[in-house]
Length: 257
Image (cartoon, rainbow, N blue to C red; front, side):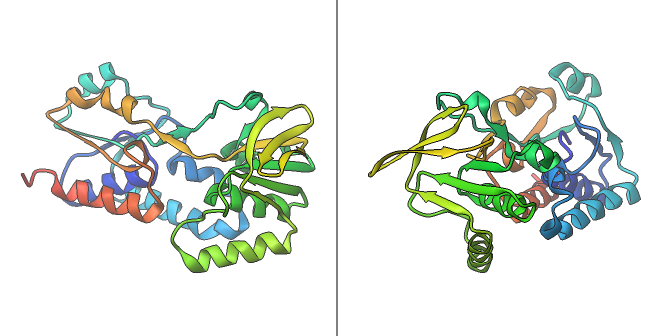
């Protein structure tokens, strides 16, 4: 199993439960994937607990874990596996906005909120952007969200969406909806909508515009084993439930056909 995030951990556990000899390889020094960046977020403590639970489940099953291990084509071939499950996740989408190099990633801010200045503009009003706005707002930052769609989008969970709306309102978060970021400069973000252009002043600009599946990178491993699967975000964007379910089902199917 290549990748020790949500999907990779579940795949490894299910494979072990079915009697397979499993090796779980993770490029970083810890299991949990991109979600580990949110370990210190108070309203995500149960996610932290779930990741720790899965790590304990892996240890309890005696699954061989190789941390700080990047699985290259040669590495995979040398292992001579019968099956490879690629769960290497996704990478941040970097749009062609002039000055985008001034922006920092949402994960970087979660890992080290100290890099965010007092005035923060978040690009993207999806689940990542809105939850990050709440986190920074609770830390006392003045936050604006620039979103090109007419509404922010936090997925299909209606109650979760309502809760996010309540929190954004409580914190006085500025919502620039229907506004497209056209430039990032030393003063902040230039947004454009039907009324013209507006400068949203910022000490820090955060890119929360989504993720791109690392599908092509995973495909490099396709012919390193007789059987190959891609799961989780490296195939297409998934939430935690979807990634876990896909990983579990993929592992169950191994050896069945």
